Every structure is written in structure tokens, then in C-alpha cells.
Length: 121
Image 1 (tube, helix red, strand yellow):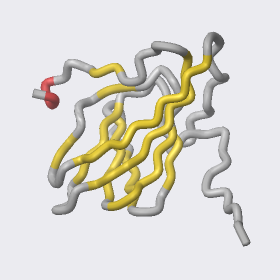
Image 2 (cartoon, helix red, strand yellow):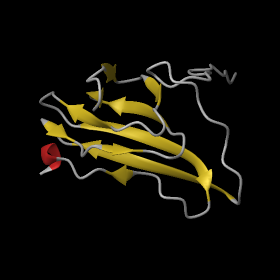
Image 3 (spheres, helix red, strand yellow):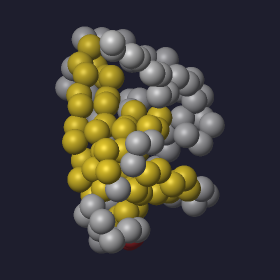
């Protein structure tokens, strides 16, 4: 018999930020598989659209640039990402991290805006 388990139902991002209303326009859903190598920091960036991730394997931290607030996520965790706040993912472990990221968006909307920070160089 099939079963369904809700793994996330929220109106807030992982840091307590209230989620914005959905964008208006032609709907487009994007699903990306992200591989973060060991001991790697992603570039500082922000999202103008909501995004949700499921950690397939490994672990990583999401760190906010402004106040350095961070949260640890590991295999099996789900997260609702922050919107409009500069942050990055950091894999501090010795193993690769694999995520599946879901973006409910509008047609051709930029999903990630990179920030030109000294730490990205």
C-alpha cells in the first residue's frame, strides 16, 4: 500500500522569514540537481523566487551574509530557502553533498542572482 508523508509544510523560510506571494505570469517550474564538492563554498547569491531543497546525501550549511546566521542540513532534510537575502551554501565536510532544488517560478525568470563579493574570488 502506498503512503504519503508530508516532509515540509510552511509559510516561512528556514530563518523565520515569511514567504512572499507567488509571482504572477506564465508559470514555470524548474528542478535542479546540485552537487557541492567537499570543502566548497558556493558564491554569495540571492533568489527572487521561492525555492525548496531536499538533501539526497551529504550535508551543508546555509549562511546569511549580513548577520552570519547559519543552519546545518543533512541527508534527508528539506529546506525552504530565503528570498531576497544574500546567502551561500557551504560544504564543510569531506564528502560531496547532493541536493534537489525546486523553483516554482514564472517563465524565464532568473533563479539565482550572484553577488560580486571579495569572498567569491
